[in-house]
Amino acid sequence: MSASGTSPSIARRRRVTSTALVSAGTVLLASVAVAGALPAGAAAAGCAVDHTVSSQWPGGFGANVIITNLGDPLTSWTLTWTYSAGQTVTQAWNTALTQSGPAVTAKNVSHNGAIPTNGTTSFGFNGSWAGSNPAPTNFALNGVACTGGTAPTTPPPSTTPPPSGPADITVDSATRYQTIDGFGAATPIWGGTWSAAETQTLVGMGANQLGLSIVRTGISPVSGEWPTQVNALKTAKSYGSGVKILGSPWTAPAAWKTNNSRTNGGKLKTDYYDDYANHLNSYVQYMRSQGVTVDVTSVQNEPDWHPNYDSMDWSGSELRNFVRDQGTKVQNTKLMVAEAVNLNYNYTDPTLNDTSARNNIGYIGGHLYGTEESGRLKPYSLADQHNKPVWMTEWNLHEADGSGSNIWGNPSNQAVWNETLDDIMRTVHRSMESNWSAYIWWYGKRYYSFIGDGEAAYGTTAGAPLKRGYAFSQYAKYVRPGYQRVALTKSSNASPLEVTAYQGGGKITLVILNRSASAIDNAVIQAPQNVTRAEHYLTSQNANAASQPTSVNGGQVSVNIGARSISTVVFTL
Image (tube, rainbow, N blue to C red):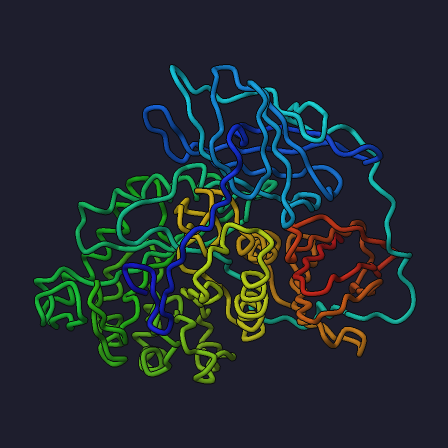
């Protein structure tokens, strides 16, 4: 992966933000954690509104707003508030805004009126101020004051009939496959880090948090740069549940390499193998001293890719020799070999075939670039034979923006959703079916990733969950470390569905991709024993991890699987 985030197989296309200028005196300011109301007749009332001032200058400011619906689904919305210091909105996007004196009214536009339960929508604006710019506090959603919680309510009746008859999906927990280590993403590799709030959004298990259980971070060749990520990694470990840290080096110090450079590949000189082992060990011990356990330490990121940024060249035999002769020097962690670009077995077979080298590693790693095309998106039999879990440690795809227009800030954009479902989530499913134990995306914070980075050209809000993050959370949040994948069978009615099932923690979890254009209503899932509770969450083009109704009858559960969606069904046994 390049310093700018470009993979060996993906060319980036930049886009220009398309911003709608609202008439003078229209727009909004946004805010704080908030609860709001639903239209008349709705069973519940509640929401959260997050406001971020993206920039401020003398006399002006820019802001972004995220509304999260914690109540029943909305088909349209109006958010109101009053300014207390004479602020005036001058420009807005993704909302229709009017201002009368201090009173501001923000309404949905055509593409963001529907907000399902636990779903979000967002908009942004610019404004002017003089003297001070306090955030308003008197928000109301659809006419009901926002109070920071939800009104007590009786859940709506299930729309699915009690399950009965032949099952569409039958779980066989007696047949077990790989143990799951987790799902994750990388911190910035070259400069920058995640804030505490961003880290919590990525690893947290609460509403509108994504539940990542692996954080990948870079091991700089310069030890003075190691402190940069400490706070984010400490937050991930303390706030998340069972979070693992993977440290990946892009290069050794330049003086230890044959090309005397951090960039353009170059090999590690053999007489510096011990220095490099000590370097990796020093990183692990430094992080331990800061309260961060580095669970897995890679020997090299992409040993087969030699770009004009940090990189280092290895052959498979050289990697074997290093871990065989120096591996025990890297302590309090487990070593990984070798994160080749497309899981090229030539870089891992030599280590797996050498008893001494194999005993010094804990994991096999590889990237997804070209792996499917090379026929290696499948079980790695040699790794399985020697009980070495396979981790997919990097992939980055964002070709949906090829037309050049701004699409990433629109939570219901079809091109973004199609790429997310058909490419990214499909490969997560395929990786799980391949008995791989982990799937790690590239940067967790990026306009095309899990939370936005706030780049104006792409329209995302810094730190706010994106559609891709909600989709990934359907695995990450509910398939937890230590769960085992188990077998299942499908009826002809369920043949369009791509399904994997997992058991652990007293639960059975199914992740269901329906990439077809047809919904499957009243799909019956048969568990191997009685179910005491069933939960169903769905992400689609217009829903973000939204709770769905279920019906339970003994060991059978009935759910509605939406078209073009990813669902997670969790049984408590």
